[in-house]
Image (cartoon, rainbow, N blue to C red; front, side, top):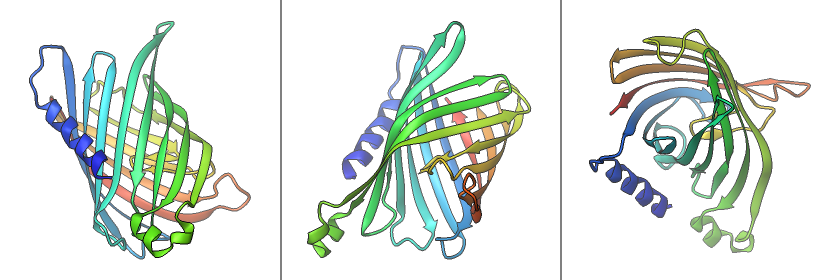
Length: 241
């Protein structure tokens, strides 16, 4: 795990090195509060991320920390990604790959990875992809339960989607929209567990944008029976350098 943190920290340092090539850097910070059926009350999390975009290629990394939760550890997520913009018959498409690590207990963690393709056409946003997940035991769990040391639970070929509509375009000083997705910043759900988002953003100064999100979660929406699972509110800032 420490090697992933070192890679991310090294990437942040590279962003600070002056370059002659035309590039764009984005830094994001947010705070999230909510509850769900497994949280045992309200939780509070904070996240920080950076994106480096050079021409049509982008590299990004994000970290998440639990401030108030029922989980004994504070570090709760690492996400890395790489993407490239394409023009298919003058239709813009961005394809990418991601890796997501979630150490959500002292005994078990999960790794997610996959491929995504997304496009934005004025008011509409569509993202589709496939993801893979593996649940593994931590070193502490292997020491406590050596007979299960090689145990891995895998979920292969999970459909990933994010479909939304926004009132304005990305170039406008403010925007708001509604989205249906089974993937969040540090979460990848099964296909049958989409989340409903309300999102809004406003440009404070030319290079600084404030954003806010509200999300409602249900379990088994596409099954015969659906049940309430949780909700969260998130707000943060994105700074374009």
